[in-house]
Image (cartoon, rainbow, N blue to C red; front, top):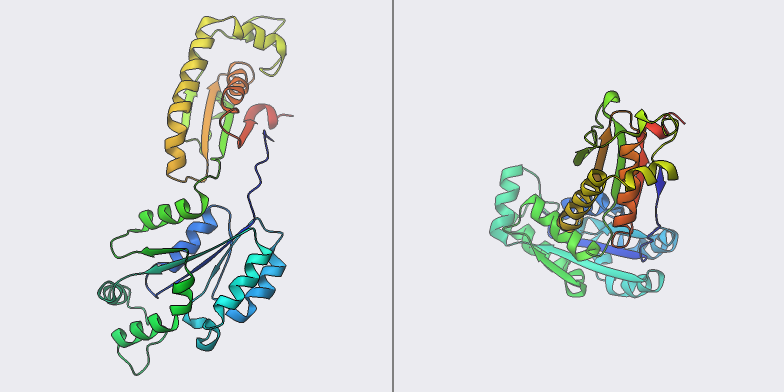
Length: 290
């Protein structure tokens, strides 16, 4: 397996905070899905030491809430200035919702509010709002989640922190006789193309070899299929990227997984690389036999 290009991310620290029940845990999991190193419930007074130890990670997310200690939350603005010295970008995202919606969520999940004690739930929510005010005032983005479902919140978080990240594209050749890979999102069948296997001088070669490439470059059907697949991918890959998938796996299969499918995957990599920087090429039945 080979990766065509490296695309390093700018060092980024995201601080996620907000009211209990507003979706902070979902937000951290969403960031983890796009490559963030995430930690939750870190005490505010450990932020500086944590930042100094995490600068070798390209993207880090930290969850802060009232469990970190009431007094330390007041010191957050000072720590934030220190954090900006260690990371190229620091973003503070604050999640909120109306008291009515939070009460409904706590009732549905039967969770206990972290400040619940002798006071009522509505009093606990009001107290939490007051304690988190230092973080709320420093927020770069305030996200109201009253009418946001799980998938909408995940997409919102991805757009806030990762809207320019390249979509990883896996291009995979395979042999139908050995089974279709289970991880494909899109699959194309190249068995309709002229088969180099039936030419004795081409049979020992693979779609990586110049002789096979020259043979299929001269076949009109091969060029038509290549152009059709490339045009489809150029049209729809941006739509896949807008949904912030972890990757898109595109498979091309032929009978033996050595000639036609390998050729098309190599050519597709060349077609897509000018616009897509994160391409992984995997020739399953060549790589596993080598």
